[in-house]
Image 1 (cartoon, helix red, strand yellow):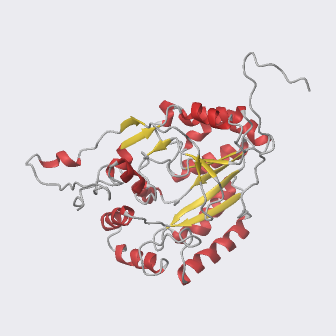
Image 2 (tube, one colour; image 1 turned 90 degrees about the horizontal axis):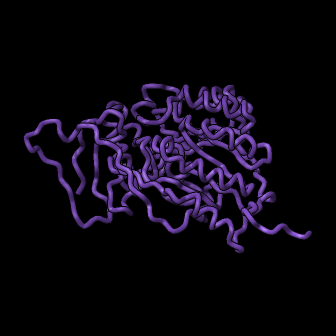
Image 3 (tube, rainbow, N blue to C red; image 1 turned 135 degrees about the horizontal axis):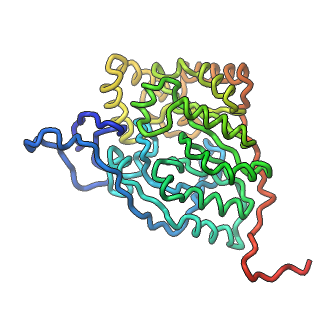
Length: 356
């Protein structure tokens, strides 16, 4: 059983809190006579993640990395479409409002990373930072976990790719620029729309579209390779922006581009449909029908080779438009090949130098 659809909460992507799919208990909202108490804006709660390792390994053929690090579980950005929301169910929390208000941080991430990199069996391969949840979400401004991770990677000359929709990444240009000179870093800025109002309701606590374009410019000016990720592509909602968005990104300094079609695994379908009914009621049915058309009649398909791009005529049309738009804007559709050959263990205080 899931909670009924609640009234919108300013600054949050959803007010709903459906039960986690592994929970044996069910919650049901009810009127206790206190009026608007349930829809008051909840504060973000911070918890400590007790993970013993920090690098996750990936075997999916759909993503261009083998290793990743996520400094946080849950994300304050509150994107209504976020494919990572269902991961909160593993914490016995809701993929709805809990996902964006109950954040688990990994304060010892840098220490764990240094330990893993020092293992004799470790073989350096680029690490993707902030793939599931944004490594530069608002709490990072205070906690600085992502910066500490970057300091470890820089000291080890270890290649890293980052993806974010936050301007906070500009804080770390002093680390990223020297790494870029050694071909050790690349950044992708996720840009969903150029429409400020649409962005504000879809991604309530992320940087505005205009600010993200400025971030691309600032990174490129510092010599840091930056690309744009048009994601998610939502048919009949933002797909018409593709050509203009990619051109704007190229003019801001992006040199590469990628895209991902909307993914609605598990509870995300229900949450996104509720968002459509609230913010785009006249388009809700049409949007969901197009989504199903690209997913073999279902709201989502997790098949490798299909889950990121979809299938069918509409998906093929999006792919063709993307290729042509990239060509016109001068954007490469290939990621930069980062250099893993420079990896080293940093010298420790009092460490004896090699004789040869």
